[in-house]
Length: 461
Image 1: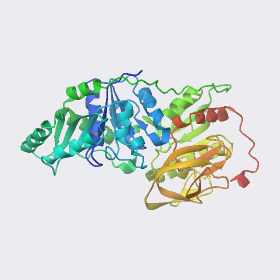
Image 2: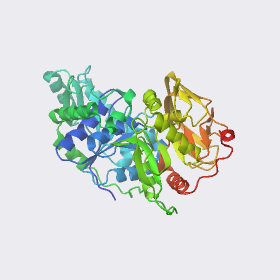
Image 3: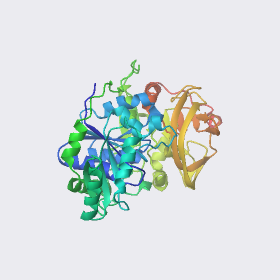
Image 4: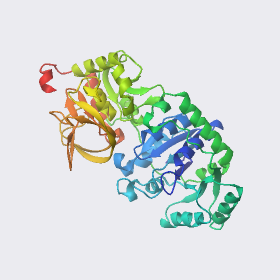
């Protein structure tokens, strides 16, 4: 059983200010000495990273499609352990689902599984008494949902605020705060920078989080919100654990380098926890700044949070590119997702990369976004051939060819994708290892073993 105070922040639709308010709430509470834990609904590494920066501990993703709905509450309980308050930032509108499965992966569905009160953030800039009809509709749509109150954003004036509060008071809906139009400014670094400013501890990101915290402190009734969060009932679940069912037999803890920065990795926090639990010594390597792999590295993991927009900096770090290519050439495990695949390619938009894979990347307009139920085409460290896993894709750049002679994945309606070569598994499909924790054990076992011979290298590529 897990008893942790918790809130889900959602909105009628995207663009109402849920991200800024969630980050600001965690920052404001941290300033008061309240230990927070931040979670993001859906596969958004960027928002999760800023929630983590505000809370001072890793932000985590809750995604029913990637991990299965039954793992949501256990993963939440694990990530919220030791926290005074957990804040779950929703995605899109409260009842929306990007995968078309609202009963499974909408913010409302997550709130129901967590038995958590929901606070609706409403942009009221062009709204008067109609806010009552809007909120009433969201509360009545699902009687099982616990709509605990609202926060009003972009209020025009004191008179406007009074009108809104009176309309909601008639419904018996508490208002926990009201922010003027200028009080929640767009101060976060541009999303094209990805999660790097947050995990890199860059001054712009730190200042932005602090400013959002100050705004929330000045406009939101934190004590009443804490009271609402503390009224959430205990969760009758066992917290998820990264500990393997069977220990991995290795002669010593192999060094596994995970791409990231000083404040975290480009992978899910559970990835690092699973690797450590499987017996690895996990160290961080910064692809943008470190010129060599950590001493003794026997495997490399590059998560999907690495931003595509840093191709020039990745290319300029030639010494590290050479070291990664040598690690792959010797047969050591190299797992790359998202932009990590592009980094392993021969080039990206004409800039030389690591040259592990005989493929060239180029950036196009628009994004490829969506979930895929993927089947492993080739046995690898990630999965045996025929294994089926759900992953997520979000990228602008594409590779030519799309797959190697031994592809990583296939799925209905799409050509095979990704590359399996020696110990390399590279694809733009991103996985959540909590759904397949055996990946960590397979990787640690491969890292601890002597690599296979390297004869026939070029033919294998």
